[in-house]
Length: 211
Image (spheres, rainbow, N blue to C red):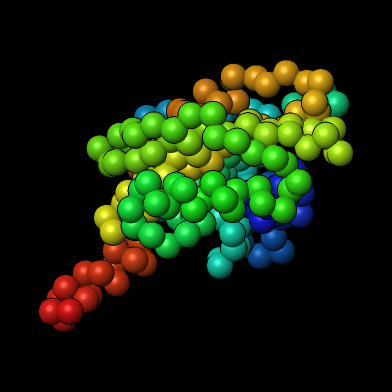
């Protein structure tokens, strides 16, 4: 995703690390991730999920940013050996039909990266009882000696569509690794919404008003 974590988002990561590891001059900031007795963590009282192991850095967009939150790891090997995955509550497009949304999404994904992408597989799925589509994509950019492998979930949540996205970057001669995608699957399938979001509250207000 050209604006959604191309390479590192180093500035965002640095900011999160400062917020989570350093005390301010006044009151110590509350950790962004609170462990539970269930082997999961809670993020800002909004989401609960299984986080990846040590070596993965939390990445968080500020309010109004391009994505909600996720994780990033730099891996052994030549640049750009790294994997990131995110939860995004506003994926590309506006159509509420999953098939049409998926078709549009694939035209925008990593659009400005120079990667020539192709869909290798697409299938209907159920995630926590919600209808969704899983999209598998791979691509290369010979001019920059890099390639990518991605898995995208587009999932119905009420009248909206949300997404989970994992992208792995490697040099052309590098080998993709399955382990980061396994951590992504654990993240997605354990993900719970602890609060109603703005859109759900807005729809309730409309119903109450008879609109």
